[in-house]
Length: 273
Image (cartoon, rainbow, N blue to C red):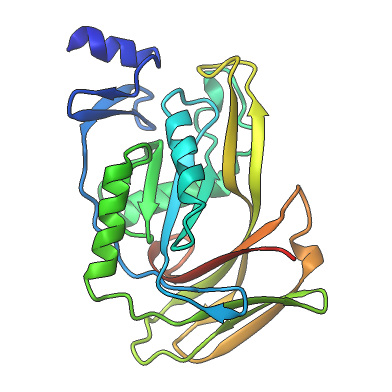
């Protein structure tokens, strides 16, 4: 077991026995964790200009400087093809000191991941880490744990959230939320500019020599406003998003605040037309 663990420390294996390997942000060390069973909360959305069933929101906190991340990045690519999910990559920057500066990372993403850990009270900040519906976390390369979290969110009866409509017309992106009888106080509405796919040739660090493709990469965050359960709408010029290769948009309706993010109540994602 010690030998296999050391092999994982060099990035040659991603899984050991019944556990999973991840890199902890607190110590910078690889640690073994057992497969977790995550429980998720509310997420619902609609596709462009049409309502659809509930979609789970998957946020993958990843880094080009982490050798355990490529399997999770590949898995997120698979999950991003599932129309029942809003799956996004959220690159962090705290591994930049290992020899490769992440070309997609944003300090806002790092702050978001740490804020999630603070709200949960567990202090768990690592890569690759998935946060499902703004609630509990799971190892980003553990498809079983992620699927279990999604299943829990769909079966716990707590997915009555506001329909979210995203449409494109007259050079504007138009977002609308309907009334909700069980409004959650303090919800914020966020617009994320995304790049559907970007391949990065990594020249140094743990992933040196590898080319990794990242999917639905967050390139910008814009708060549209607050939502208190009453119908509301926003209109945003395309030019607000059309930078750094952005070709998709995601809307997140999330309880709490940016500093204290809590359950995601509704979401949608669509290509910018």
